[in-house]
Amino acid sequence: MNHLTRRSLLSGAAALGLTAGAGAVAEGQLVWKSTDWKLADFHALVSNPARVKQVYDVVQIGGGRFLNNVKNSLNGLEFGFGVPSRQIKIAVAMHGPANMLNCDDFIWSKYEIGAWLNVTDPETGKPAVRNLFLNSSKAAGKGYSSPDPNSEDSMYQDTSMQALRARGVQFMCCHTATEEQARMLVRTRKLTQTPEDVVKEVLQHTVEGTLVVASMVAAIALLQTEGHYTYITV
Image (cartoon, rainbow, N blue to C red; front, side, top):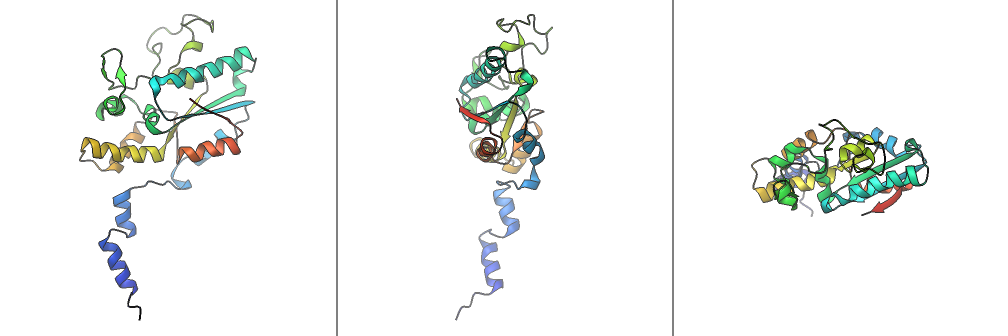
């Protein structure tokens, strides 16, 4: 005779931390549902009517070299092939270590991201406590001195995320990667915060204009199959 009653099953699950409430506390929200994020904003990106659409799949920071590739795509399409800038849409899908480039300086400083991901600040020679790839050096100054795309002092040669965003590039952050990285930070830094506390703080300090998606690998698939974005990884 099977003596497993509903009560005994629930009691056993509770002891193992498998009930819904215990699971939420133990595991956090590793998987977002469609109602948990700005799905409509992603659909708008997928259905963007631009003539040329490209998605960059970026995992490694690599000194930010991928940003130069994005800049070259924009310049090559606009000037070399005569595609109007309004007819170009580039999405940058950052996950893995590159996901942290979506965070502002507060996160980089508080969680010592440079030391964690081996990113050195060239100004100090020490692990970066600021997002080196985010802000344009022209932002706080008088701006660009030349409209010539061949000039190093033009907008067209600025590889900062800020400048590329101003040119219409959509940077994306992966929620799954953020959850996984929060757990790693708590473990390696021996933090007293819960992983979900870290995730909440990271999302609060995600750069304005960044699109946080539920899963980057899934987002890339939809951009390709439904949005007809061409795929490139660097």
